[in-house]
Image (cartoon, rainbow, N blue to C red; front, side):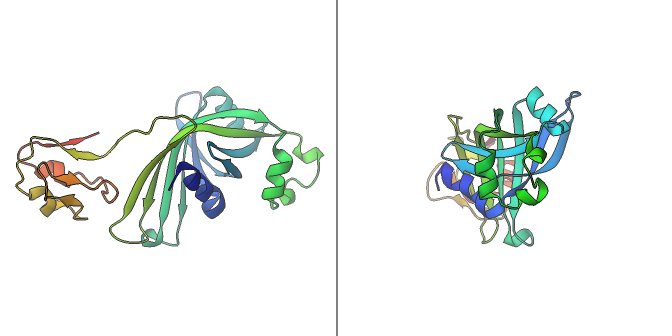
Length: 206
């Protein structure tokens, strides 16, 4: 999938997220936030200016959230995003209310909406983790000009081809047909078993 597909999934399929910001002491604080709209490069949500959440967003543009869909662990898809936010004001509020009609029950009239404002997550990176089938599927994405960063475990040229890493891998996602062996990142669960068992020290974590 492309970045826009992940953003669409967050808004349309999951919608409610657990959102993290930091307070003035640098301590993380979480809250539930609905993602109300998206485009090719960003996500949109709203809040009221009287909330401490608003103050934290204005003091520090860096945020993170996780969104999950599924009734239990093995029916779950999780998407996590780290990014930057900016306040874009109230102009988009009518559009967000039209796309999220339940908001009219929370803020039923114009006067009750006076303190609302819209924020845009304009840049970020994300990770998709799908446990609805095995082996799990993992993917990374970036949007808004952010650089997609490699993470996980990688096998270097020090590999001797002994195969111990494959033996310890719970997902059997290590291909021994080449030297060095190759970890299929789309199925790796980042457990670290391969690095622990490698006698040549050929496996590194990024």
